[in-house]
Length: 581
Image (cartoon, rainbow, N blue to C red; front, side, top):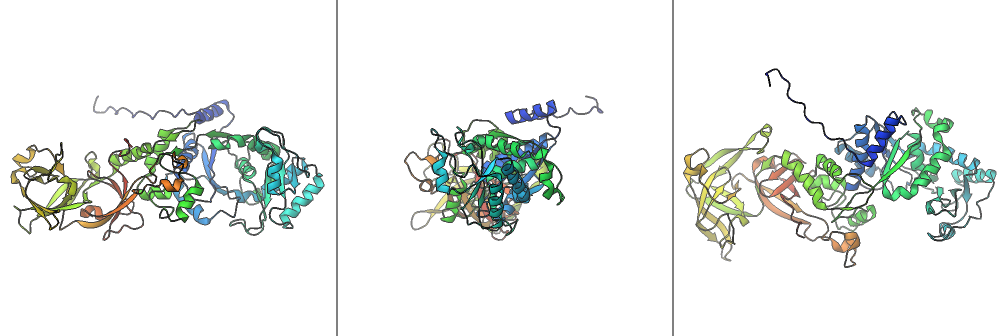
């Protein structure tokens, strides 16, 4: 290559070829769509979890890859369960994962449009007001093998239905007295099409829409029309909604917002753009990981019963929790990519998630030294006031991360299990009369073992080989083991929380012994120790990750860590300790 030749261009990442992206490519190639619009539509009734991360990466990722847009929309049709706290957390989680939305929307923004659409269905003879109670509706619905029966109120006139529906909105009837139901087919093999409810009465003010509403649309109705209003081209959802797709299409087709812009007048008057189109729902497998539960109801129970320390407990699969644990956005995006998109539900091994984090942190996390189970080591041939400064690379493979100063003195802390008075077979660390290399400092020989009155080893008295110091002729002398250390005089005491998997069995939802998931909690999922860290670790910013050499990957706790009182959470061990479990 000549001096003026350009270096070869880096190879482009291979195009993703899952079935959803193939559908998008075909729709663009055929001219069916000229722009791609997706949305991420969480219900703000809880915190997002790892499963939502897969959906976020897919919804926003598809939009990015094909030059489209993705909305964040809160499907807030149930005011009883929704909370602004969840809204704030969801927005934070999406941005933390590295995505931003084209528009922030709420299903409640469209309440007036939903109401007009419902009146349109009534006028078309596609909806009616039903007086059956919830229990009676279940009785009339039938079973998987028996058809349902028509409601006695199914053939009310259009005029009566309109009058009753308007009175429902006016607040004339109590909760549960009446519903608006779609008139579809009570004999359908798909129970979702047996005259499903479209509206119910709830005399509860809405946190955004206010006290002006006492009827609320059901999820299937509001969700499908929200997609249509926003011009969503590809409505991506998990497989449990596959049986709901005929109802989704029925609502979209019967209301036909893309052909009836007059129904959008309430939005146009507020400055919303005219985006209505006919969306297509596509289902994919949800994310299931062993050694955890993903049900919001079960996660809520863990929090409310004090079995975990809140929604952001680092053992929880919530995005708030795993973020506090030290998982990075890049590791979760890599995990979503590794898991892939399919139509087949499967149980992903937790080690896949852990390995994605190891891969990211191994490449990017600076190294530090810490001792979690300290044993004092005294270098007897150094003066009592001996102090020197050693320089260590922050990362063995990335010079751009620079170096740091590490103090070295006469008295050190080493890990207790780096010494064995009676070593097991194959032990390569420190033993009485044996030698070991102190990382970056030289070789020491153990001359004396000091014990307390109970016979417990409390101190090792060692001699440092001066010729083995870095840069001297004996520095390359071979010894079997190398151990890490921190200066006892300079190290900072730290609280270190050793986290592990929350459950002790692979499938806590279906334990072979018939136990409740709450009875399958791992008693070793959190252990707190008092350790020592080098000064450069203590000064970390909250959420800064390190590899503590030979111990694992740790993160400064985002809430509790302070440089004068450091708190670190173990994110993941250096290797999988569950592989043989």
